[in-house]
Length: 335
Image 1: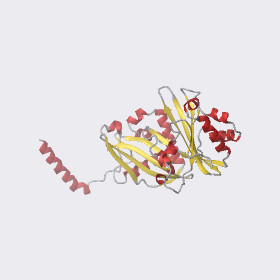
Image 2 (image 1 turned 30 degrees about the vertical axis):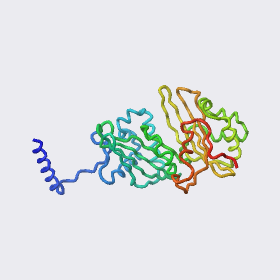
Image 3 (image 1 turned 60 degrees about the horizontal axis):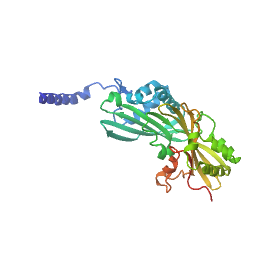
Image 4 (image 1 turned 180 degrees about the vertical axis):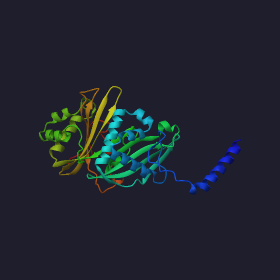
């Protein structure tokens, strides 16, 4: 019986191949979902069609259809209100800030645990500069009705791929890192660099210490010594320029924390440094637990040099302070 079925299938396939030039062409698929299940667009330009469709939905402001394109499993893992807000921010950026883009021509493919996944890499351009957009999705999956769809979409300045390329990739949803100066976009709250600089110029080390959150004060190593160096560094600076910013929400069993990262370039007589400031803007479980978390200072990388080939361990410098509170210097800021 199985042999007969195989023979019939071969014969039917042969006749379909013979007749295919005379059959009416099937309409080109234009949606992510087929019968409610996410499927990748077919053909060698499938990745480009994915990006084009996302841009189309951004122009239409269609949060619902992008939300539905995220895998059901991902939607279950995420907080719906947050995921929808992240998608709204994504669509606003794509529709209001992006002026042009390259075609999606670089994609990484993976296959593991009976599921195929991709990372579609596309460059976006805005008035402020160039961004990398990474669209991570899953398809052709065992249990595709639950697992197929977008998992994470991240956008970050192209120059910061070394520190943001894999950032939060295991988190469901969207992450956006903005270049300072994008029209109409600015982080919530006052600029911490303004407060830091004013206190440093006044020599107020106690005031600088008080800007750190209680947990950072308790958990940071040699915070007082770091503040003395920071005071000298900022008091002697000749100016600073905002570079990037991002904010995101972290959850624990009883708390919702709004974290912020802001990067700056600081000019001094010794050269230009990058200063990364991380803080807790809000914490619903611990309202008093707000303030600075960490400050990292290191020589600004040469924008004309590939970060992967620089002598200094750039990624190590860039990621200090992301999970550890305190003040970090590299190298010592003295002549």
